[in-house]
View 1: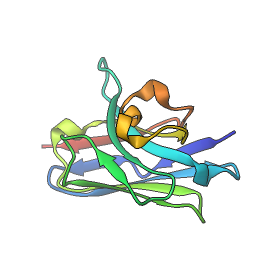
View 2 (view 1 turned 90 degrees about the horizontal axis):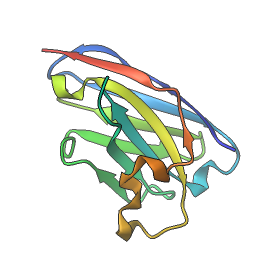
View 3 (view 1 turned 45 degrees about the vertical axis):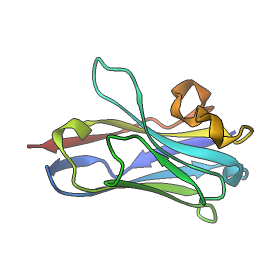
Length: 129
């Protein structure tokens, strides 16, 4: 079992930065692929970023490529999402998710929310223009 708790959301002006954190419980944290998704009201949950169990490989949605950075610290059971140059389109509830690392990343399965086994409660990010 893995429990996830996000934090770090808030209200920021466009162009500013924000760093989200996800604290995980469970001694097998390092064996999970970790991802960040976001969801705006009335919209489907969309992929933002993911990081492999080792932290060597990371993946990003085109909309955040070059602006966001995902990282993990397995020793501390934490995952972070550094968000830079935020804009209004980034406004959403952000969710941390964990997926069992049983598949090759070449299939890009990590893009799909239903592939993840555990989810945090979400943290709200609001970007004012």
